[in-house]
Image (cartoon, rainbow over all chains, first blue to last red; front, side, top):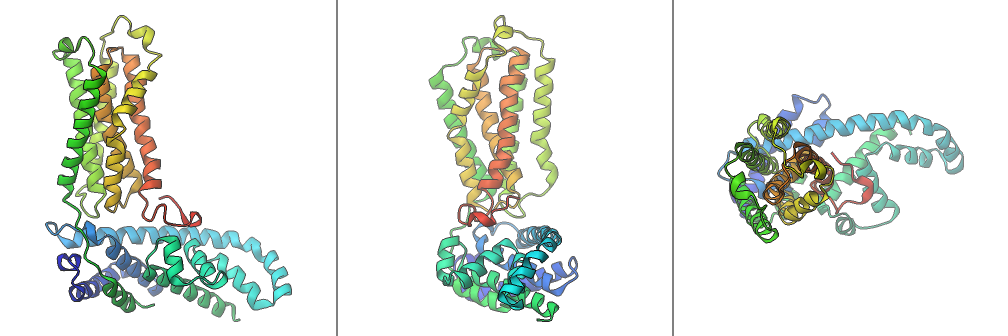
Length: 170
Length: 223
């Protein structure tokens, strides 16, 4: 990590590969679904990248890394809990979606309903990308997130939308 | 995007970063700055007339020593919390709380009254103003310093940051304020420090949450 802080890309890539294995194992012991484990692993990698300046080479690396991984895991669990609550609350939208389906066709209606089930961050990124037509670079400037982070968030949103569409059989 | 692609992308984006100084060093740096600011402020505002007598008063000395301990332990906790994995034990968070409790006990058990104390005990806005004035530079400085790191518990970090800054500021206020009435001390010295700490929790959740001020308002969900 010390070399990565100095800008050594090769050392950083090697480190992240090792970190990915450790964090995935950490997430596997605590989360049942492979999707969730991947999400926590990816978010931990992004956090490690963003907060790498806080690592002190005088201290051991693993406690620093696991503190970030544990935090990301707790945040993820909390987000899942909120998402579940939203899904329950979203059941009231069925009447609205029926009107939408009649008006715009089943796929559009369903897509709009499915967007509600995404996290706020994913929904916002997808709306900026697809409805407002902004580029990744523009969204990155507007939100302050890195371009990699915007891409990852959008990708996760699409993945979840795809899953919802497949489950609905559309 | 797979994890492998993310690693490739992150490694590709890698730029050298300036390492944050060690936790203890940053805490010492801020502590020195805060002491300097409060000393200058206290000197400019003028010490209480009976300070030479109070220096030999055990109750005054105990309260001052407790405030110094709260200042030190809170600052240490705030800086440790701002770096992932730096906090070795969560029990360290209890020390400033214990200090606050002891301070409240000391005030309530202190039987010393100043002649004008009872009358002035309900009017201590000047003490709040002094505390705010003395904390005016140290409080934003500590928040800025912990924000530069990566606080994973913004609420706790904000609480300790403001508690530390305000406990030192109120120590300065005790040197300025000649009113030793327990009601005055509880209401206008202890109370504001506690309130400042609680404000710190909200301020921390707002200011120290990562990406704060850069996210669209829609996503901001304080932890």
